[in-house]
Image 1 (cartoon, rainbow, N blue to C red):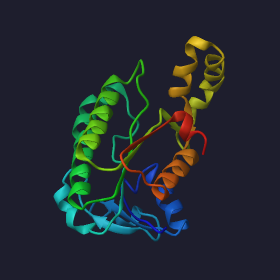
Image 2 (image 1 turned 180 degrees about the vertical axis):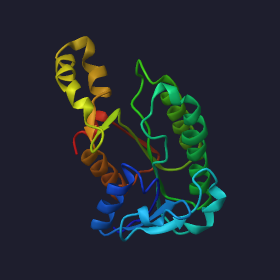
Image 3 (image 1 turned 135 degrees about the vertical axis):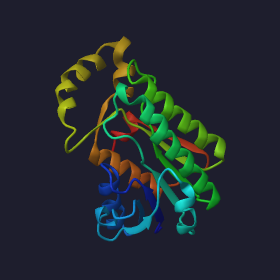
Length: 214
């Protein structure tokens, strides 16, 4: 079935290839863009001009959308960006949830982060708060929990793959190594497209092992 998909974050690392793949599958795709940034959207993606931190700036522009994908977040997260996680990740998610509820969106997709984990505590805390906002909103939702997404400009963790393999062989480390494993950008996009095309009632969680199957 053809979906009408809106992507908040359509010009980003995951958003651009996701928009391209959804269009290739025959879906209608619109994407949020700041004023003057419309050209950063992929060809065929309908621009929706607005501010991700102010839902009122685009709330009435996405009437009729059945699927909302929330990808807004701080690029290259690190422990030094704790304040930005509050100001951007948390704020944009709250605005997106409110816009989706206002428009009675049937399916909300959110890219969170794998947890628990021994590092990136501020980032994980904000993403968990976002998950809770989605749950309490009453929206039908799919929440994806990758740890690190390998792709252009994000290749250095390939060096960790031997360590991950060894950890999976040790029973006491196996669960953590799988939960905090590496996935590729292609796997993330495929998982998101599959979620768009197979909406759920309630809240569905896709962790690293499930994402890695795509």
